[in-house]
Length: 280
Image (tube, rainbow, N blue to C red; front, side, top):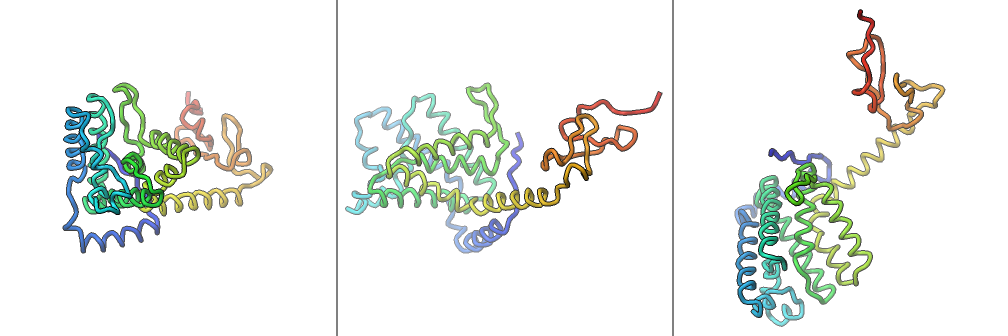
């Protein structure tokens, strides 16, 4: 399946890309290529060690704990990203495959340097949230930020739920946003901050584009509303249902090239009407 990426040019994106281009020229050689392959590989190794030795204290040594970091265990600033999710052996395979698909898809679209910037900005945000709250957290929200970025770039990419039901990524992204919103509204303050700060990379990359899109749509709506004629002086009318732009300023109308004469239709009836012809 060919993945068609989302594309929307905006001043915010142009400015961000200029900054990233300058940074990539200076530091691009330090980017870790196939970053997700290494992260998943280490996750899988630790999962197998934990699976074979449930009582092992190795996982505890990797957790993000701001108090222990301040005491000198600085490796915890990064090691927590290698702690695998708690799942059965069957499900962990699909989880790792999904992480691989999302990570490599973003790296293919952006390049290694930009993907590194996105991922490690999320790591930094999560660590910052831990120091703000004084409590450690997992890679849950960091991984969610990867998923949301993938859904933004490839909104129409489909995956099979239970290997049967095709669902587009943009719809799954709404579920993840609902989960984040639920966390912010109902969870204790440390979880609220973790949910907000750890997805800072998402807003850093896409926040400007989202605001520009909302502003663009709002301006277009206001322009159409301002120029919408009253019913008495309407310009367009559907031949089938008779609706005009006075009924709904968002209605769009088209002429049918297969009908004889000037017959206009709303988008609901453009492809479903019977063609009008005088031929015998």
